[in-house]
Length: 350
Image (cartoon, rainbow, N blue to C red):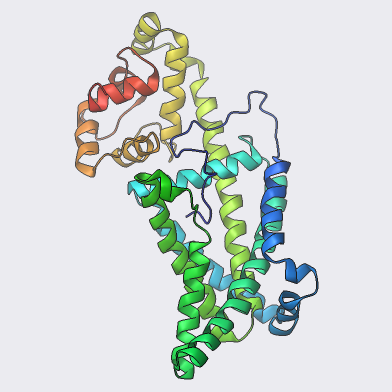
């Protein structure tokens, strides 16, 4: 589950960036921008101000806090894995946003060493800055405000501080331009808001239950590291799989492939093969109904479960319950680009 959104200028169904030279790349500019944003938010940490004082007095980094923090981060990772399995279009859109950001940072070639180091750096800096800012500074100040100005008892004031600081944490993770885009952008932001409320509450509970700011810092850093690194490995591995499978010589020698090469050209068939294997996320050589729905959601075609079932039945000529490459090729063969052909075949002319 993403902890960040796309740049405001990048649409959820924008084509994935390609590295034509197939060389590892690193977007230093974007990494610097992410680090600068955190440095700006936590400037009092680096300048020896209030943030630094809170970090040094409220944090005790030791084996115990490390283990507890990793367990807390593991809990969030478990929740994230459960949510990621959803085929809900809103979840799919946010997952795609995460994929796009990570692709922009690391490119489309697997480079685990570089990705691991940068992911650890970004995760650590983000964990320190955001936990000091929201749990170390905002939470107690908002609790004090609730007690002094609203006259709430200590425990209720503390809960108010948790709630207000968590809402602030969640809102500041949203892309404000989504308000003006409307439609799906607002829905994506609402899903992200809910997830950030869950993560922020988890970090607050870890802090209050242990009294040690190091615990949520470790949990936050571990979760962000996992999100960056795991997404890089998953996306680049899937893209490599699609590229390799599409180039297997036997793929272009079937009767169906030859038919569509004659009618549409070899580039079209190659594009269809790549699309097919990008959709085949479990890499079993066929596309399930769920894989099809998730993939089409990424193209901006938000189908219901019943609609995806109907499409799978139409495309599944041998009634196996899944779509193989030849069936997929026959189904989206009508004229137009692969994307347009898919939309026309699945939804009718649009």
